[in-house]
Image 1: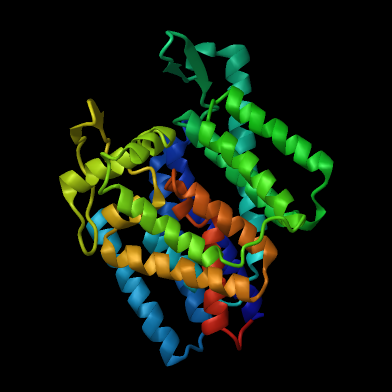
Image 2 (image 1 turned 180 degrees about the vertical axis):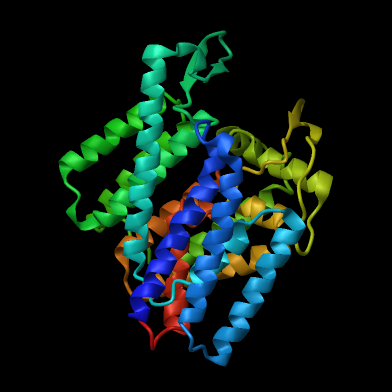
Amino acid sequence: METKKSENLFILGIILTFYSSIFGSSIIFSKYEILKFIMLFWGYVCFVIKIFFDRYYSLKEIIIYSFLFVLGLTSYINTSNTVFLTTIIIIISMKGINIDKVIKILFINISIFIIIHVLYYVILLFFDKTNLNIVNRNLVDGDVIHRYTFGFNHPNVFGMYVFWSIAMYCYLSYNKLSKANYFVIFLVAIFVYVFPNSKTSFLSILILEITILLRKKNILKFKKLNYFFIISVFVLIFIIFNVHSKPVIVLNNLLSTRIYIGYIIYINYGIKLFGYRLIGTPTIFLNGSYYTSISNIDSVYYSLLLNYGIVIFIVMILLIYLTIKILIKKDKEKEEVFIFIWILYAISETICLYPFIGFPILFISELFKEKLWKKVN
């Protein structure tokens, strides 16, 4: 009975924190901003009660949990951002929880959220076109691309939710994916490219499909994925200190100036031990052009180092690295595929730091299960 109550508390907590994180990205629900904080608070309450329901903890668990919680609290105090704190609380409270069940719940809720917004947008299309909230992208040749937001505060945000909902579906249906599934997913990728014109999400969906196909045919293997991850992270960090080299200039253009944005933040704010709150719109003249950052770092790796600080950067990279080692050791093919996709996606977006969006972060619970929860799971 207590196990069922414990699980229900976790499910309620994950739903509340999920909606608290996405309300701010919706035009429809933006007027209910106060609900964001109410849901986050009660989500935390659910997780904390669930943690106490588990009752029995080893000294090792208590020390590790306390360290991570204090680190999360310090992160919130310094950055005014709850992402790391929320991630830590969710993963700690996943003791005894089936991860596939969590992802299924997230998939259902994110799908409902997307459907509501698409229907809302269709209604506006027929009855109130003036409030469609279309973002225009001006091209070099003078042409203009109309980007449809579908009720979100930016077309890329809509594209991002579509991508991660597709990823969740592919994860849950990994062993049942058919040619028809792949074709429909490809059509969704085309839709994301044509209407919101979200290139990152379009490419991410294609890369996801190709990765799954190659892995299932045993063409692509992930035996050295932990090394790939570490090398990728440190190459990306290294290049923001070498922004004048030609290869970096080319890569920066491919990544829509994300490297330069990291460099601007670094020049203006530096690197702190426990991070800081980014404020302002620093501008810098670099390689013949002016670049402005709105203090929003579009890369998980740059965000962890520059926004959250050295300590959290090291802790998160270490947790992910050790998690990948566990996945490889246990030969968890499906999980390897999706942590690989997360690693790539994290290069150009920070939203996947949220465990209820970038769900592969939840695989850190596999590390805890192996090292701390063996008697429970």
